[in-house]
Amino acid sequence: MSLRSISVLAIDSCETLLKDLTQRAGSLPVRIVNANLLEFRAQLAAPPDVILCMGDTLTHLRDQSSVEALFEDAASSLRPGGVFVATFRDYVTTELKNAARFIPVRSDDERILTCCVEYADNTVTVHDLLHQLERGSWRLHAGSYRKLRSAPQWVEQQLRTLGMAVVCDRVPGGMVRVVARKPPASAAARTAAGP
Image 1: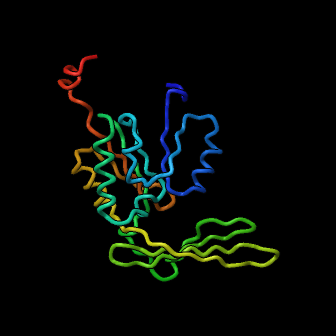
Image 2: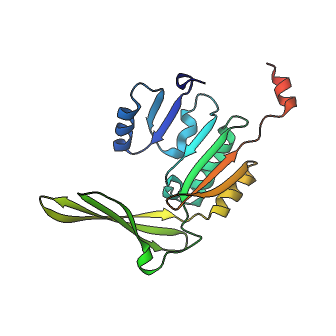
Image 3: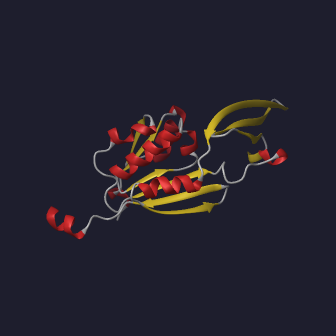
């Protein structure tokens, strides 16, 4: 399979990220759409082979019912044998305590980004602390946002309930990876459909 036979639909609601992707994609077959992730089915021309929900996207959804709706839409829109892959941060299995709640994210000579998490029942509040070197002095930029707490076992169970075969594991950076495969079409259904 050549790279030219693959087409990609990239959906995000952040204009800055979409502009960056447009520059990086160049002439690659990537269709970039500014839309709500939960409305991805309206953008599909055919059942996809793969749906990726990478980074920590699941935890940024509004609530657990939004996560369930995304899973249902992914399972029903994938072609038979298609794969849904998601990565997300596990804020359920182990709650960070005291100083461990402060997580170094990245740094270079001009920036130091740290985040701190505060736990509630179904969410965490993440506080981003960016120290940036500006004209010889360090300046603090701070912001906060809410994220969902979804247990890996819950995610796995939701996808299994939709009839998908699921593998769940941990990957570097404290993330959980879930790979869910839609069952292939039965031999009878393939025969009835013809070649």
